[in-house]
Length: 118
Length: 497
Image 1 (tube, one colour):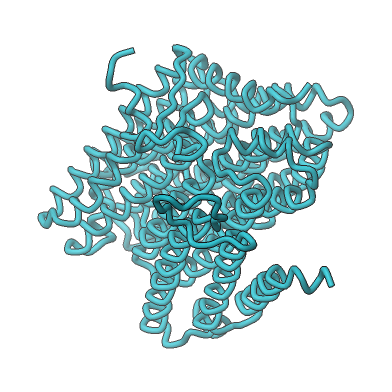
Image 2 (cartoon, each protein chain N blue to C red):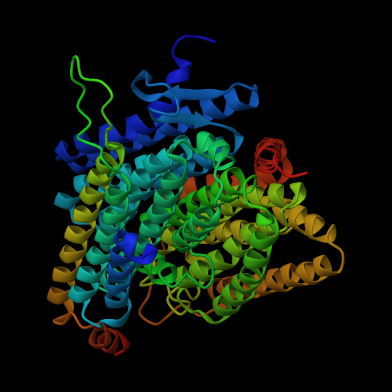
């Protein structure tokens, strides 16, 4: 039962490996980038799940209300930054793929290596 | 303590970061170059001021937005970070001062302001890592510098820069994400991101398994960024096809900053908390360092492309730095930190000489530079001086750190003897690969139809010689880098018996 109770870590690990597999195994550069994005998203989920406090609510201070259990807001703030980094990486990576397509006429890794070898 | 000097750690990052967007607006391209160079010079001056302060025994700690330390982001500078800052800002300044002509030939004029802006962002990110004392803040700086450096490398004139940079982007992002996972696991267990606070709070953690996993993720992630063998696959092509000025900048300092962070995490944060971590760390690192030294130098022996030859030599030099760290002794770490500084000097000067050759020769393969010493004696002279430093000839900076490394290895008994043999063999290989370049340039016949009679542009030549002479200067007057590295090594080891 404990294994299922920690399901959010399973989601993290499985997503991480799906992304990692795509990065390593797919010869298509575009698919590699999508894999990289999945890989990063898994880490976002790791951060977001850790901020939940059981029974906790949104961390908003109110006058006259005390004894409230709050969830931790910090990981969400951190991961907002990491999401921006992830978007920038994906955008830059896709930009490079477009340039590679223009220069080589292909976005398959093996074909590009073949062209470079000539 | 005068009022403003405690702001220096913040200014170190803010100056290049704020000038970067301004540079994009400066359309006449000379202006963009001048503004970027001024910002880089200012950052260099700040790094020198910080180093002098550290040598005075001053402690720099800056609370961003005046939030108290474990809650807000803290910036701090000690001897180790001061040395890293000197390497980064020095390399950037030299490369910019030298690089104007080289950039003009490789980047279209209307893209140059953007190029210099990306350059300053790399600088801001790279100085941000040593300055910051907050694990997540460091991740953000790491990504700022990495993303901007992908842009710089992709600006190379050869289309092969594109697949090279794509590979670097994939591997660099995986490295940074591994680091992020490690930081996340530590945060999960300790609830803090401040490095000093983290170190204390791990003591209170009962179950250390997640911390062990975090240590593994952070070490591997940063090893990827630092191009530690066998995770170096991105480095040779990225350095080879980047614009020449960018290669000077990145080869001298990008991997050093990742190494700085690797040592800081493994020694400051994990060492005092994980039982036997020093032994695990050494057993993990030492074989990889030895392989890096032998294979890096071995591949460099057979390379005909000058930049790729030096890139493989860099992989071997990173091996030296890791070898010193894997001894986990004061002497070893001193050698390691010292070699970061000295290798940056030698490799910076060598790549500057290559940039100078590239301005006049038809290419930078050995057959292209054949006979080049006759028309470019000064450039090749600087190459030889810096090459001697790379080999480790007495009287140059490279000798000092190799000497420290060998004496550290000798303190290890029989194993040390083997390590000394590895260092000597690799140095002999360095003699061979530097000699192949010298042989081609001095004794080779100039290729047919190639009639260059000119020296490299004066600014480029002057900076190349300044860097080459710095190798000699720091080979004779060793007190500054040695003092800084010794005190950095003492700090790194303060938790070991």
